[in-house]
Image (cartoon, rainbow, N blue to C red; front, side, top):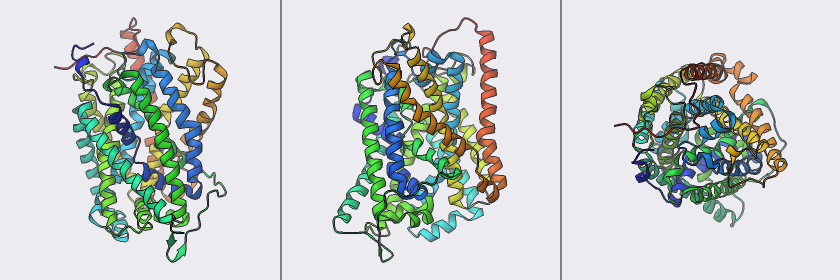
Length: 503
């Protein structure tokens, strides 16, 4: 362990809490996006996702992080699976956590451009028309690439810079969400909200549509409630150690889930679901605020908040954490010395640069494939690709957790916390709903449905290549790399690496 490790930057519980809320995504924007697709049932989807996935999963993470043998690990996720599933499967899982996260940027970055344009203009029709112009799509692509390299540069500065930007974004995004909730509650105390002269009559349950596209979009909700396992990469940068880390995770999931469900219920009361579907992912959130009597120019304010919280929040965390989780605890030397080398804060700077090159290539490929699609269709396609890919690391975690509980008495698995007690039955039963939901939504999100092929064959083909086909190729690369490394390092049985600080 480096002599500088003990003097690394330490963040407070409050900073960590908003750091993680920002990293989980901007609450209100995610709720509105889900409402445009699931309509009145979106709140119910979030209730089930919270109860069956987010809350149990959070306590599973706490159980993983309490494994005594891995207390000194830098990354969490990969070292947990190294121990439980073996070094080879742990490496594959860590690689996929890094690899599939790249698709998140393809989803996130074009959204930042739309926020910037809405910051300058509150005319929804003008902005929608501009974003659908073919000549404007290359501008979106190249601006997205520039923004990603900006986020990469900040990530290279380490946890101190990250915690400042992320906690700021957490406060800002959370504040705007609370403003929406308070304004909606205030408006509703004076009666029914009106849309185009007709009162909005809320519905809370509608006939469920379990078509291919609806199942695919379930991954959006799962993603917006997930990602807390990434924060284990910064567990050693929080004051108070394990106890503070656990409190931060528990507070996060309960605050986050409650706010999401409340926001979803309020959307039913202020904006008709069919109108939200017509508005799509581009403009529904701005109209939602106008329904609460905010002036049209408030659209510019909302867009500015969205842009800031996305740039300083989600983008910054997810640029840094998955890279650290893979390259810090990957088998030593498997990527060469330069990519695994870290600075005194445990940040692999060269690996971040390599990630920037990969993201640049994928953004260009995706935009070429979707060139003839409308912007809303592009955003839905990238959300599906991102949401479906993002569920894969959780599936690895589920497999690891099943083995952890099934062979719970192994000395290597000694820990000081057991979710739902030491009995195998209840803990394993809690995994069944998560596994079922994730497998179904992963397949539907990654493989374009029949309507997508009819609408845009070339775009669907590229989505298939970037999704399932690239994942199979990545799996092949992982197996080849690991076997090559193992042949050269037959006696290396470590579960995580000691930090090697670059000069």
